[in-house]
Image (cartoon, rainbow, N blue to C red; front, side, top):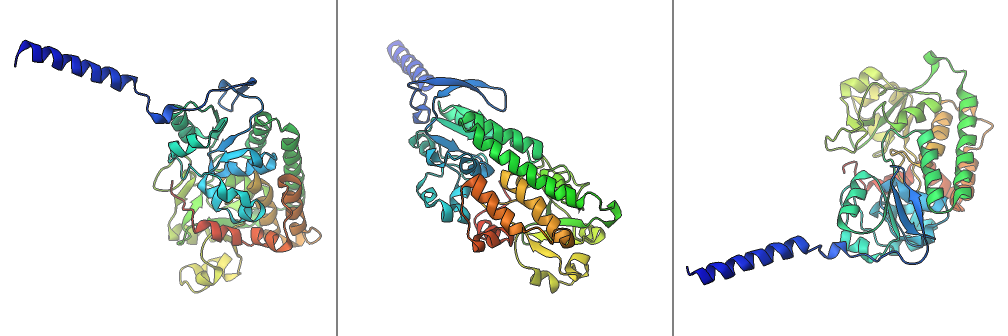
Length: 371
């Protein structure tokens, strides 16, 4: 090879390296902030500029979609998760949801091109999704805490953060006051139940009913608020990635038999299936027909959401101790919750669908516990 060919070959290599390092790719193209801005601090204490007001919102966390309705900013949504689009209750109460882009499917799976086309002023996301958006785009990201250990205090903090972010502090406080009110009602009516008389509850998820929420998750507080005992209290699950969503773990049939729960909460199948099952029918909850489909509304209740924090302890406490709630109209409180907090005027039938697990079964056709 001649010196001339070597020289021009080297030049070509250097040019290719320069172009490769300079190329940002189409995914990095996003509109610059124009007009008024303000500096916000997200839940990770990061400070950055956002348009003021925020007119286009991308909500990229499964449970976070409900926040748009709680704060009355649903018409500013420009991108949501596929799970929110699948929510039967949302589709019934806000039909526009079906026309919105759904670039986020499961955690860590985001269609960046679709997200950029939706042209958001801001994306709200947890750690995994938020870091992907920051890496691939110039869209501002407000990080939120997305731990399965979030309790009532954390939910209040999160809703107030959203209220601050979207200039909807008054709406955030409406939710907080309702949560406090319902929590107080439940605790007052169950506080004097001796520990030895408290009902033992097992959350039996998935078709085999052997996936549950550990005692280090938000569900521990929900069950205790209802005056009950979590049979899986000693199970630790947060951070585990065994093919299941963090916070969920699989236990053995032998363990459930040993726990012998008084109440069984399931999210698939039916009570009739368990009545006929030779293993399950020996458990007290099955013998006493204390098997219930988990409630669900805008989102499933086996994630720490604003909905489940209000409804689940109230629902469970009434199922466990009906005599202590015989003067309380649970359906009326749930209807009031959705009307005052969400702006949803639910029919009696829709309230029943929330409480009897109908919406849960419909969502579980498209949502798995993986991812």
